[in-house]
Structures are given as C-alpha cells and as structure tokens.
Length: 413
Image (cartoon, rainbow, N blue to C red):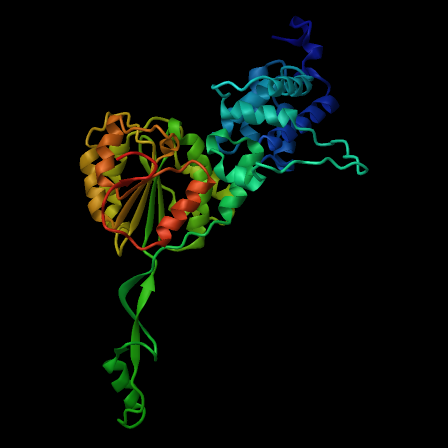
C-alpha cells in the first residue's frame, strides 16, 4: 500500500517527515527504557538508520526493523510488542494510558491481573519524568501507624506481581545477597606450622639442608572448601517470569564463588555456567539468550534430569555437592520416568533442595503427577517467589546438612 492509497497516512507517526520521525523514535526508546529494556543511544541511532532503509508505508516492516536493533533478549519481545502497539498506533496513546491508569486506580481491584508485559508498558506510559515540585511550606503529614515500609513491602512482593520499578529494585537487592555454604574438609593438605598433622617427608627434606639435623617439624592441615553448588532451573512458559529474576541471583552467585554449575531446561538441557561467568549482567544474559533455544516453551522435567544424570552428574556432583532444583513440577510428558531419574539424582548428591513458586499459595496440595513423582526424592521443598524466600534459602544453605528426611515448607506433609 502506497501513501497515496491511505488518506490518513499523514496522521500516522511512521509517515511523518524525517525530523518528526527521529523525535518519535527517541521517545519510543525512552518508553522502552522506562519499561525495563536496555535501550541506549546506540540502539536509538540504529533504529533511526533502520527506518530509512525500509518502506515506511508498511507497519510490519517498521516493527521488524525496530525489533531487530532494539531487542537483544528473548524475554523482552513481549514488552516490545506491547509498547510498539500502543505507541505507534496513536501519538497521544501515552496520555490516554495515563488517564486509564488513574481511572483504574479508583476502581476496586479484581482477581485477574493483566499480563506482566502489559503492566510494565502501562506503568512506563503513565510515568512522568518532569513532575511538579512538592510545596515546602506545608509538608504532608503521613500516618505511619500499622503501615509497612517500602523495603519490607518489596521483600514480601511476589515476583509475578512486580512492575518495572519493583523489578529493578529487586535486581539490585539480589546482587547484594551473599550465599555462604557450609565448609567441607577435603582430602587435600596444605602446609601449616600450626596444623594437627605431621609431614615426615617435608621434615626430612628440610633436614637435608641442615646436614641431616631436624630443627623443625613440618605440619599440614586439611583444606576446607564449600561444596559444589549445582542449579537446575526450569525456563518453561509457566516459570519464565520467575526464571528471569532468578537468573540475576544465579549470576551473582556464579561470580561470587567457585564451583557453581548452572543448567537451564525446558524441552532440553543447556549448560550456561560459562555464559554466567561474564561480569556484566547484560552481557551474560545476552550470551544465555543465544545459548538457550527453548526459553518459554514446554517442560520435560524427566528428560532434562535424565540428560543431566547421563552427561553431567559424574563431572559436577562430588565432594558434598548441593543441588537446587527450581521448577513448578508441571511436566508435559506426564511424569514419565521422572521418579527414577529423581531418585538417581537424589542419591548422587548430598542435599537436593526443590524450590517451587507454587508454594506461595497457602492451600497448595501436590496433585499433579510430576509433583507427586518428585516429592519423595527431595530433602527440602521450599517456595521461591519473592526476596524473602531467597533470604530464607540462603539461611538454609548456611546451616549444616540435616538428616535426609523430606520436608515440605509451608504445606501439609
């Protein structure tokens, strides 16, 4: 369709002259940045250049060009689609979205929530960068009785319910978390004059330098190291929202300590330990996005654990390894072979901790076949849906391993 065939093409932002188009691209980049996407000046300039090489009469070509240069991670695609549909449909869509947000705030809350991407884009539209200054003469008086601080509210907020601002703050909190593990004695020895073990070989070797006289007794001490930490994280569609935030936690842990191995699985198993070693989080997540082809797809828990047992268990499970299994237990294959593979994984490690976001519900019951097949083979069954649950996990891993008795945190056995 040519501009002559569309009588309203002059009202379309994509058909404005070049200066107006450049300004719209800049405002669109700011919208994506407020929604949580890492869009900077380089992406903005590339987007303007991309629009000069396509037919602006086709909105499909415009969307594809902008998506190609402004979206670097798979999980940002849904946010970009929502923002593009709202921004390029009507130049005044930002004001309309802000007005709708004010009207919705006055209504009663409903049980159903909008998709996360829609909420983040709506918040980005409704946010105003230049707000009028507050009057200094009469400061507002706030009643702090029976209220919760913003920090406490963030600790208890579900990852699924967070907006763009809360997600950014949660990521900053996650980077400050420290994950200590109970130190284990290894078979290796190191030289230590105050050590409990006598090293006769080094003692005799040192005496040769003194004409055979033994002047000092050389001693050793066993080396203590934290056990290996192996993480198996579900990235299927039902876990995608939690996996995006937990990936920041896994990145911080991987860069904070050695002997951490991270595997992601949906319909297949992917080892992303090397990618998460990158210091810059954005670089690490971009490498993960290229290495993992099945993000937000189906779930084959049994097949993924079987692949781990066959290819990686002997390499990474040893010296008291601790395994974190992060999944909701909803298996697409109907728990086929899941119990056998879970039993083998349980016997190959010292502690197997299952983190399930479904445990955030007080009335949770293990009804699905996958959950029933996995539950008898874990040492701990805990929720992972907010910052408070991550801190509780850190406290659990900081304690010594307890006898293997399966427990279910927050539910009835």
